Structure formats: structure tokens, C-alpha cells
Image (cartoon, rainbow, N blue to C red):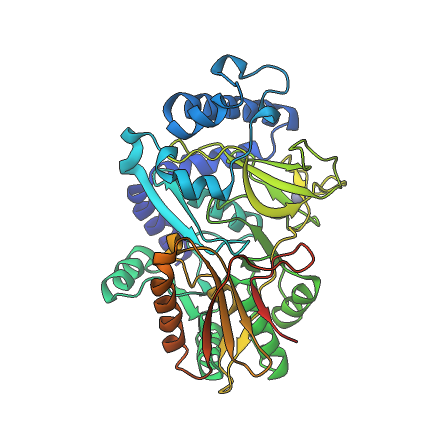
Length: 441
Ligand SMILES: [Zn+2]
């Protein structure tokens, strides 16, 4: 059965993304390459992407010229650290200028509430076989890409046709799904019945939703299957959540770090404490207020450079997270550098009077379809369970549309509690930290 599954998988994926297999073989080699060799290759990739961006995109041409930087400066001592960072504001205002006109047919758009509550729209190159980074994670934890999996996240394929095509593409591999947007006791019980029957190699989903399932397993004393690992995404996992999930599923946990702008940044090592950075794909820096690198062990602002994406080059892009390099080297022997668990946002789930919960990660996606409407938002649940959505509009004309997004959200949760839309000039910070899904305690 396993061999047959593998053959079908290779046949289908070979047609869909033929480069993925060779790219994966390359990754398996490079993760054990001497570190200095890996760095050298990376430096070369940085020179290439910066030169390309400077010569082919309107945004970088102007952005760097304003600082007096020219193509001839590439490769000079400290050249990369002199490049001015790119912000979310740049993406918002100059989106079209990031892509060379000839590459627009390969651009796809990705939007999210993101890590900071500022809706962000970004582009990416559809030709990059990103699944090789998924396969790298699976490989580290002993799972094959054709093994059965269980997913807990927002249902994105809504039409019958989309669901059918996805199922056909994966068959005979089984992908169980639980919609994390609204989980009820009934939907969770149904999920676990199928889950225990299928016995998937992997349980994967939003960290908040998986924690909620873990709490359910423990409270109801359910007997559940232990997958080879539990893969959590979308927000940093707290030590409390880590323990809860481990206690419920008796499986190792993989904390994966990515964002809508650059998806495959780093993932937990099965043997060490930290997350290994995919340096073949991304250059990660932690910097101080002057954009200079901070020493290992010291927290700094995150700057990311996508090394593979010519369609939408992101160079020293500030994604709003804070993090640090780990002091200790990893016992696994892989040469990929190691970061600590990322300090970012926390997201909380809301509970409605009926007992239904609204997943925190879902709340971050309220403006995903219309990111241009707002410059920032925050969702608050008050002690009486009513909900307020604070929103900074991009323009006064957009306010009625924002109100209609909020009213759609109110209908989605079945009108159980009052949902208020509050237009504000800015989102208040909580001691420097922006908590954009918040429950009043
Ligand atoms: Zn390791």
C-alpha cells in the first residue's frame, strides 16, 4: 500500500511541480554542507536578488537611489547592511512597483491580518516549488509526503469543484479536516472519531486550535491516536501550550515559523531546542534600531530577504516580529543556523454564550479579502461576551465598506452577541506589544 501511494504521489506531483523533487534532493544535501560553504552560497544569492531588484523593479530602483546606492556597491564590505529596510507601508503604497511587468503572469497575491494586525497584501512567484520545504519538515520527523494527515484550520476550498479537485490530487492519501473557524463539541467529537479511524501520521494546524483540541482531549479523557508529530503554525507556541499538546497527543511538536509574505522561514529541530532557518530560501537578520545586526542571544527586529522570488522581491523586509539567534549549536548536526522560538503575537479564542468558540487565528483574517480598506485593526471580546472591532480606515470613503465587513462577521457568528464597529485613528499599544485579538479579563 505504502509503495503504491508513493508511486502515485510521485507521478502526480511530477506533472504538477516537476522541480519539487530535484529541489528537495538539493535541500537534503545542503542541510549537511559545511556552514561556511552554505553562507558563501547565500551571499551569492543575495547579490543576485539585489542586483535583479535594482535593475528591474521601479520600487528598488528608487528606494536605493534615494540612499545613493548603486549596482556597483553590491559586494563591497558591509554593502548588504546598508540597504534600507522595506516596510509594510512600502508594500501598501507601492505594491505594483515591486514586480517587473514581464513577470506579472507568474505573480499570485497573498493577504493576511498578519502578525501585527496591519493587513498586508504581498505577491509571490507561483513557479517556486515551495512544497519541498514542507517535505523537509516531514522528513525530519519521519513522515512521507504521501502519508495520511489531519488538518485543523480555516476551510479555504468552499466550492464542490475545488474540494473535488483537491481530493483527486491527493487520492489515495487521506487528508482529514476540521474547520478551525468555529469549533463545537459536536464537530470536535466527529473529527476525533474519523481521526482515530484513519490514524494519520501528522496532526497539523493553528497553534490556538490545536491547543483547544488538546484541552478537549484532556478534559473529556478521550483516548486518541498519537501521530508521528504535531505541527503547529500561525503563532508562536507558549510553553503552556506545548505541554498541553504533548500531554494530550504524546507526540513531538514542530513549531514552524513563516508568514504570508515569506512562508517557509524556519522550523523546529526534532532533536534541539530551536528552529533551523531555511537559508537556501530566506536570509534572516535580527537588528537594532539603526538596522545593525544584534549579537547572538540578544533580541532584535526581524528583517527577511526572500532569496528565490524574482516576481516579488522582498529585501530586508521588516515583518514586525522580534527574535534572536540561539547561543548553543544544535545537537542534530545540521548546519542550518538556529533561532529561538519567535516572540510575536498571541492570539486568543473567543467563547460565545452557546459554548461555540471562535478561533483566534480566524479572527485575524476578517479583512483578508479587503486588505486595502484598513491600516490596522483589533478585535476585542468584552467581559459580557460582546465584541468590538476597532479599525483604522485607509480612507473616509472606505468606512461604509468596513462596517459591512463587520456586519458580515456578525452574521457569521449567528448574531449571538453584539458586534460593534469602532472607527479609530490608531490602535492602542499594550506596553509596546500590539495584541490584536484580545479578551478582556
Ligand atoms: Zn537541529
